[in-house]
Each structure stands twice: as C-alpha cells, then as structure tokens.
Image (cartoon, rainbow, N blue to C red; front, side):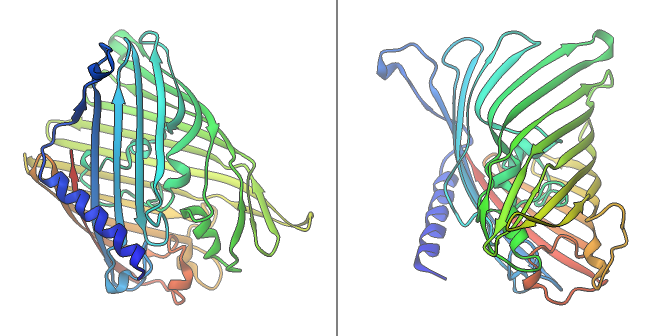
Length: 401
C-alpha cells in the first residue's frame, strides 16, 4: 500500500478519535459575528470504519477472503435556516469500498429549498434522489440496524451515481383526513457517474475486461410517492425513474447506450419497538452496442430484487435485525444460464446485532449466509464460481457528532 493511502487512513482515524472525545450535539457557529440576526450554522459529522471477511469469494472489497478493512466512510454536513420556510444544506463526503471511492473527497449534496406551504416546496442544487426507504439516507448509519443494506437494491459501491442528481425537485404533502396523507417528490437533473466509480468498475470487471475511457452525465427524471396510511406507523411507497441515454465507452472503442427505467415499491411498519420492511425493485434497459459507429448487438438487461426484514430494539443500547433478500441478474432466467449459472442469482440471509454504547458511538456486527454469485462483479478476483453456499462477516463502528 502507498504512503498516501496510510495518510488518508490516519486522517480518518484522527477524525473518529476527535468525534469520540466530543458529544452527540451539533456544532453551532453563530452568524451574529457578521452583523446579522440569522440562526446559527449547524454542523454534524460522522466517520465509520468497517471490516469485511468472506469464506469462498472476495465480495465488495478485493481481498475479503483474508479479511479487509477497505470499508470506510466519513462526512461533514452543514445546514442553516436563514429565513422562514428556507433551508440551505451541504455535505462533503469520502468513502472507500474495495476499489470504489478510494477516499476521493466529493460534494455529496448542496441544496437550497423553500417551502411555500404543506402542498408544495422546491429545492435545487445537488439534491438527494428519493428512491425507496434508504436511497437518500444511505450514509446515515444511525438510521438502521444493518451494516450492509440489501446489496441488490442499495449497492454500497455505486454511491457516485445513484444517491444524488444535479437539478431540481418539487415536494409536498396532501392531508387526506381519515385516509392518512400523501407525500410526494418529483425531480429532474443530471447524474454524475465517475470513471473510477462503482458502476464503471463493474463494467470493467466483466468480459471482455476493458477499461472505460468515457462515461456521460445522463439526464434523469423520477419521483416517489408515500402513502402514510390511517394505521399509525404503516406507510406504502412507490418510486420510478428514467435515465436518458446512459452512455459509456471502452478504450477499444466499444460503445454502449441505453435508457434504464426503474420501478421501486416499498412497505414499512413501525410499531412499538419493531420495524418491519419489505421492498421490490426492477430495472429494464436495452443497451445498443456499437463499434466505430456500426451496430454490433443489443444487450437486454432486466434485473430485479426484493427483500423482507425486521428489526427489534431490545433496549436503549442493543438492537437486533434480520432480512432475507434475493437478486436476479435477469428476471427471465432466474436460474442462471451459461457456464456459470450461479452468476444469475444471489440469495442472502442476514442477521445483525447493533450496540449503542453512547449517543455518538454505534457498533454493529453482522453475518450473511449467501447462495449464488450474481453480485460478484469483480469477477477477476473470483475466477472460479459455483453453486455452493458461502458466508460473510461484516463489522462496522461509527462515530458521529
């Protein structure tokens, strides 16, 4: 490993230690110093370090069979309400999950929003993209029991593309009286996939193993609707989005262009100390593959995934959770095809234990029993794959203020 790598690891360790010495309260910076009566700036931050170990295959990181600490994230965010019904917020973020992230410092989001009334508000900038229960809060480790969210739906390596968009959004809530309420979000913007990001790495690690030299910033339009039912704690959600002309090209000149359309359905019920969740997701895209402007073939990609889970808060400092998920690389061939049928599916049963020693420190340990290899996109690190059952251990510690 390089000296630069250890310097970044050391910096994150120092950040975590600094947080541990503080409290869970936000850091406030008064703006009265500038001769204004505006509210103070609120600062929050977090730093997480994880450990991944697997039995038969390298998963997420490239050496988990021997155990890997390449599972790190940290961020600092700021928010202020300078005027009534107005909010400004931004977050700087860095992460490392195997070959994705590599501790690059990014502007995770930076937005301004104004709420006219309950029915309509507007936000603009680099916005969080609403999809499902967790997409816009994947970095909030304190908001869930699990270490790893179901990876077929919330891929930890694809943060550069799937959590944000540069554009605008309308949002609001309609009250239905005894029928509950409806909350909506509708957005339009540009995605910013990176050549060293998770999606690019996946494409490069699939045959014919060619590096990408071009990735566009596709337009995306989408939205999410939540129905908060009359049953207290129970909500139903549906989200859809359409990428316009997602395009990438290899150094050999092979070009792929398509417009993925995604559907996402969610159920959540929070009652007493229980949280029950279930979600289903599918995506469909036909990639037009060309070389030198000449059509070669059309690649039809139609994956889907679902999970169901439950979590229980035993007491203030201990929670337990479990989920079962299934992911299929092609919903028309759920049993897989070709020389490695197990690449067509991946089934995951997870058990999680969460400990909260303090209000600013969370520690989690999680076990996975996995059947299938459909999400081992780093196939060069897993040259031999078969239909066996394998196991993974995930540990994560998060400090926050």
